[in-house]
Length: 128
Image (cartoon, rainbow, N blue to C red; front, top):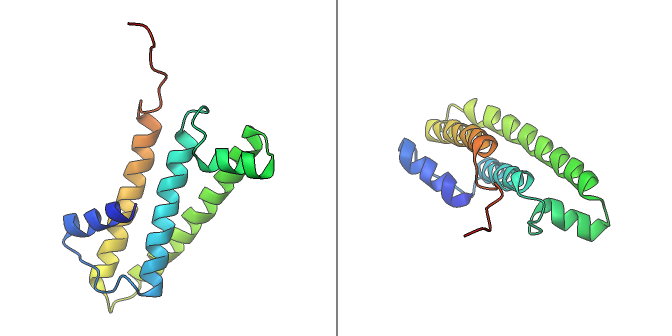
C-alpha cells in the first residue's frame, strides 16, 4: 500500500515533502491498514493468509468471530484515517500534503468499490 500511496503522489503531482512527519506517517499507516484489511475481508475463506485467518488461528476464534474482529479493526482504521485526513487538510502550511491526503482518500474509496465488485476471489472452475 505504500507503493500505492507513492503512485497517488505522482498522479496528483503532490509530492509530500516529509514522509517522516508523524502526521503523514500515521496517515500512510492508516491508509495501508485499510487497504490490507479490506482485501483480507474480501478474500475467499480458503485463503488462510489473511488477518481473519491469523486471528482465528492465534486466538482460537471461529471464522465468524475473527471476521467481526477484523471488521472492527477496519472501522477503527477508517475513523483514524478520516481524522488524520481532516487534520492534514486543515494544515494550510502544507498544501501538497492536503492534496496527498485527498488523493489517498480517493484511492481508498475506489479500492473499496472495486473490491465489492471484483471477481478476484470468485470460485474458479476446475473442469477442463
